[in-house]
Image (tube, rainbow over all chains, first blue to last red; front, side):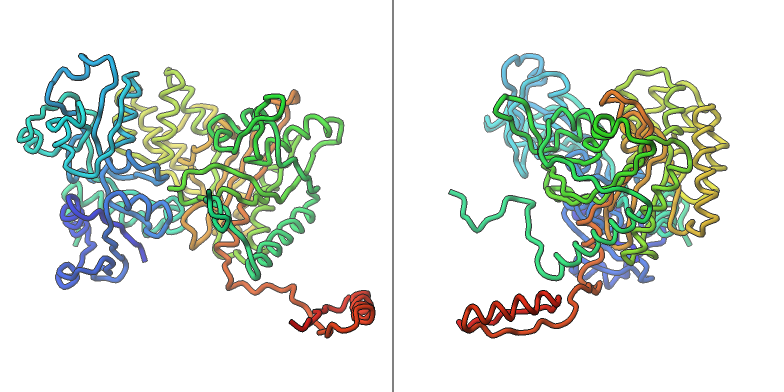
Length: 212
Length: 369
């Protein structure tokens, strides 16, 4: 049996839709239930639903053989997993946003950055030698500049609506982020046949071929 | 003040059955090494940081616990054994007839990030080094020693050793005309099979379509012998082809020994390129989400100590092996039940005890509380 860890929230519906196109389906009864660990219709797969940041953890430890999670989460985690397939779902951007579009070029002192993405932010500014003080937040990051907690934020943006409503504009795009299939290194070797079958089915689903 | 009952993170006790299992796995491994004429070596637990920096590379060495000696020199609790073995081969054993066959079972210490699956700050390595010979015979010898150890401890049906030859990837790199930093990125993208990122990286950095194809094909080349033929279709430079030939010869022997079910070729395993110079391999076991060992050829290693010679070896993690064996494995060593001796008059009690012990009888002295 192959265990698949799915990021709860933003990516969950897209991930399940793609898996269903690839022939891996949860029964309607399962979908309606609130259980966090569910078998698929065939019993060949087991789904576990966990917070996005925990997907790489379950996969690196081999508790889940594979997982579906955003690139943003992977860049933030140090997990050692394989990333064989970009699923192209939940497409969004990781950006630097601020009230003042020139905030970075104007500042020669310490730039204060509020973010959920401590690692991404510190690497992004570190690579250019810009001194920053990272203020880790766990949500509603868009509030920070307006309230004076930080000069700018590093955050995930889908439509940009929340930024706009809080008076922020995008200063820099750090990179694009999409949902990826991640694999445990040992499962990749020890369950090679099953894993290849799933990868191929997902690849087919991305290219628009619906599995029977 | 820290409570005295608390342990430092990552440190632990091994008690009862688990301690016996560790001892028994270690003994089994050492007897296999001995069976292949490997000689045990005990290395210093504490050594100069510079030794490990040269022996393992800076990134790995930096995981060691470091502190300074009274003369200001930087010391490390050993984060690996191989560095020290390479030094002794080039110094104290310099005049000894080659090949040298050395083995060890000893704990190493690393300051790992807690987030990782393989998180153990103290980890006992079972390993060996075959120094002074190059070629397929030496490579096969250490592979078979590793396989025999795994079989002997009862994992015959559940281990998988993935093999690669870093010459394949390095041959492809030579065809790229870029500097070293993109090499490191390329290595990481192939190692993590990051197909999407790899494609955009190659589109930016490589204008030769056939080299782009070869690199992107590499991440699919995991399997048995047939993938060597697949590889030859896209990889044509002489260095890589020579490495494919070497791997092919190893595989033929593995197959003829009936071991091909336990082995796999993985051309995308390029995780430690700066260290290995020929064959490299990793050991996985059913039921464990991370590797239990790794090894390969590192012909450049002993040159750090003034004597350049070929070397190949591997380490298995005793801690991981014991984790997968669990307590399901029956551990012998209990022997006969202990004979109970009731403590009474001291001289008489211990005369009995010493006499029984001289007959190798197991005893247990019962004392009234």
